[in-house]
Length: 200
Image 1: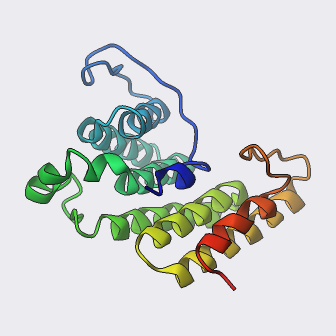
Image 2: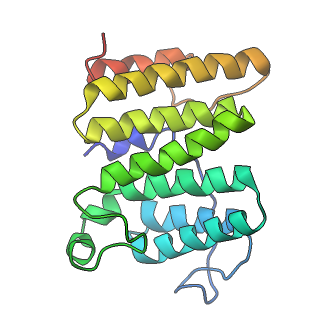
């Protein structure tokens, strides 16, 4: 349903295959590769069970190394995971009956859990003054709030994303933002997002 538009600004991750971490998944101790593999698994392969395990393993490695940027990436990926259509497709019954590896999450409130993980990433990105990441996290919080039927919060998140992007460009004038075809600027890209959410 909304999958086509909220994936537009999701982080692009590479595919890694073969090995024994899961069928067709490379065993690795690199948290970035784990997050890359996890994203591909829930985004393209409809394999959320292995994906969640990889995300949690990556987060544990980031925590053990006290790598805050790595941890923010892990939390952001978990935010994408809980919003993923793969959860409510053929796996819906499994998650309704068995739950998630994150025992605080429920199928019914998966979007709320998505927001919680985006907020964790947001806190770290704010501390690190990573306005590029804040641009993306705010945007995706907006998409998730839309799915939750919270247009006011979605509009606030979209506006926060615009503010973060302007600050990122102010600090990094040469920063290049990858936009979908047909949009001249980030604020131009946000116009249809805000229109869809009926932002003032």
